Image (tube, rainbow, N blue to C red; front, side, top):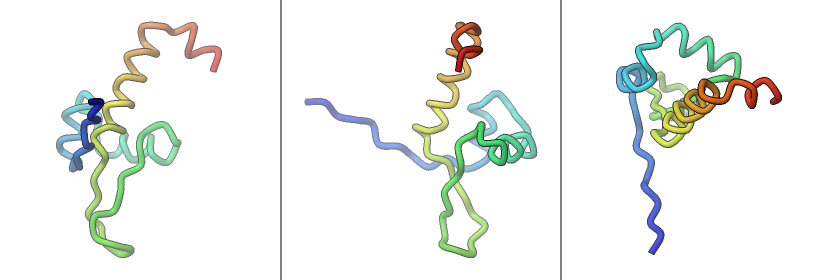
Length: 77
């Protein structure tokens, strides 16, 4: 049976830890540039609490690794 791992919700301190201690301002700058996963709201339209899906953060990290290992591949995108 092919079971997929359910994504978990990560709050900002855990996201910062996982992506190598990028600052909060750098993360939000990259979100606005479209180069970092967008968080989801945890409390509706006017809530300030957000979290990231673990699988999206894992994909982001894997893409960074791939780009650093294969820079010519990244340059052709």
